[in-house]
Image (cartoon, rainbow, N blue to C red; front, side):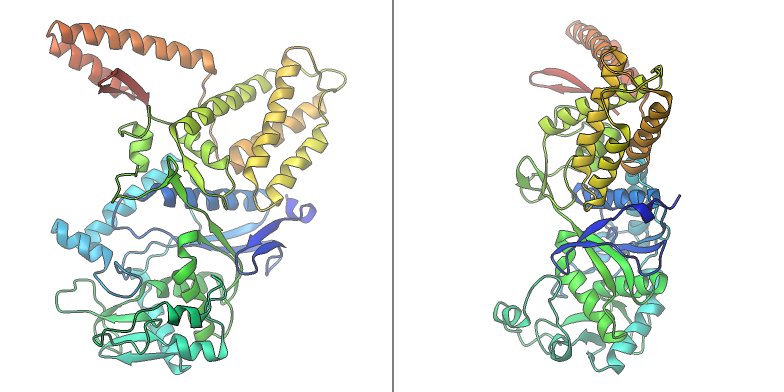
Length: 495
């Protein structure tokens, strides 16, 4: 069904700084590119939030009836430790420290990335290209940029000439930065850099003798700059100009700014019509950072094996929690917020289970289903406003409970429309799954049962019957219930 013909979608475009009516380049078809992970470590929970935002965008566009080609890359080479083009390639550094091959690092963390996203019920992208799989395309792109006069080669490395580019184009238009300000705020080169200017960025880096990841090129053995891969892969699979480019707010500058410059320098066209940026994820009101210890990874959140949360949280609860905030807002991850989301999710699933058992009446009263349905679309059409959508879903939850209690009525056609609409938005768009829970009662009974076993285990430990104590712990772990011993006693979490 081509629902998009009857729905006006507006998207906040980071380039213009305002919401714009979405009009795809080709009617009924959308090209969308999202910057994927650099696979040198376990995926960061903040990145998961970004990918989840665009998973929801992908889901809604498909629901509207668009044919979407969604490209999300894997950065498996070329991402240096510093955006100033210094330091080691992150993957090569990890390989050196672990004394394994770089492609072992790539494989390990790519598998982990996919496992996390599968656990959280992400739809796979249409294409998931890798930087190392597109070296030829990147070299050809560099040649074009050099031929057009916007890059220069020095000692086997190639740099993009930002100052030359800015004479005829506008570098900084996405992040709203002026080159003059960047020059003023940049320290003078130390005399050892090959760059003409500090603002220039690497398109190709010469590989030192110890550098494992290297490829032959017209300028000598080396590896591509980080920004280059996205330009090469997006244009290859989506064309010289495509509809949507997404990523985290932290990529706006310099990464996305450099992408625009590369495309305009090589092809002469601005690459993207709608730039979308997801905001940051905080932890307990502060920026997540390994250096301060204020961090938690997806595995720890899902298992409960951490010192930030009181229990484990299911994939459904994590998805529901993230959807309760606009993708453009800073989201604060807290134990209290997750607990509230868990209650909300269970209430929603209880209503979905109740809905399947409702009996139709001759007439309807209590909620105008057609009007309510359009409000759900209005929410998502307003720059994918999932918090407002969820508020509308709970208006339906209230109505379902009123019908169940005999305080409202619903006829057969409205019941079918309500059921289909709820299923579409809850399961297809938000990506939630009905866990099969019968609600709070089942959860409470599970808690009571486990608490009995915790007491029996405590008695066994007091009697120095460690075999029984360990058996209780291990048997619970085998069915997905993790015990966590602390100074205030033993708590449990479920996977």
